[in-house]
Image (cartoon, rainbow, N blue to C red; front, side):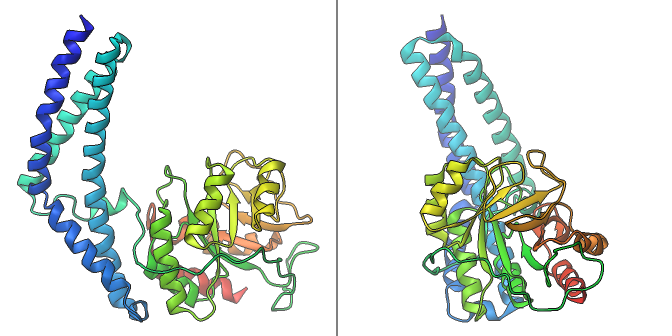
Length: 357
């Protein structure tokens, strides 16, 4: 009985293929791919990122096109996966997969119907809203080769101000995290951020791919003579996967946003990498105290490591954050106009407040 039903849904799924092709044309996906390629070539031109207004405009266009293409490609991938599951289950006469096949088909049918309607109602299907849903990076180009493990700098640039905790550093450095936009990254570097953080956790609204991060890194390196140090934030990846991303992008530091083991830290150090870990796991060269992350210990404390304070840091609580005495402040969400969408104006306001401390 299951074999017959699988055959029925296999035919239904195969019948969706021409519909997906028609939808691709209706949404202008081929044209979007061409436009994206041209814009990415523009971002690779020497000096492109020196024109902040133009680079921001192009970054927005690149992001819009990447979102549009990614959304359609995801739909096609889901169709391929459902068809493959159906064919495998039919071949093995496995009735346990039938419910998933039916559910997958019904979901596809619904999504295709919705997107066809959207294509009819709007000449530009995803518009600006897609920017809030997907967060691929923008920019393009070459990256610097990875360097050896750098020792943390203990010398500070300014005398300590009153209100700091005992043993606090003379000056607190700044890490701008969740970077997913080249124009924003260039401005953060120009304004004096000490670190730029790239998140490689797909579930995060601030996630970037290694390729997108690499393009952003090149933009920063072309625009700023002495760029910030670069941090990769990882959650579920293996040490081998982390090292691959570090090398591809040209990152200086691996930040493990999970309960790291001593073996994790040792393996990354052996490969010549500085390692930051979440409080509660094995300590690395730096320890992150993140009040927004349930896996770590949020009670801030100093130790024989670089102490990093994160989780809701903003201009409103900057004085309180300083008073705890961290080596580094990690700021992300308060620099966003919407979840995952970085704002240059908010960045400028925060750094202006940070410089006054």
